[in-house]
Image (tube, rainbow, N blue to C red; front, side, top):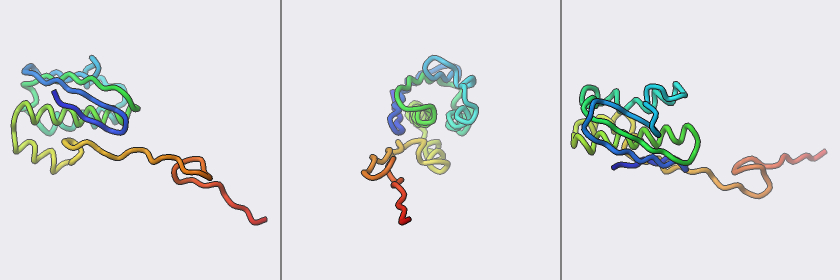
Length: 128
């Protein structure tokens, strides 16, 4: 059991021996609705190559939006592959490609400040 986090999205992945079936909330990754996010989720599977065809990963993801959930799922899948196969060269390859595959992205939304609509935006000042 591995997990991945991004913003408020939390993904939990269960890895077991199988035939290369990857699901997110019961839906196969290959038919994930957003094509760009589908590609992002598939990155660890593609990088692992033939090694990834011998395992099944079921991901349950909650919270956040579509992009946060995709990033959390991607991290959980990559961690699951590395942990199940216990392969240091694959772990190094993931780190070389993109560190956030194995390490949760700790960035969060900044809090709103006074005198503005958001974290950075301020009300415009007029002198005339």
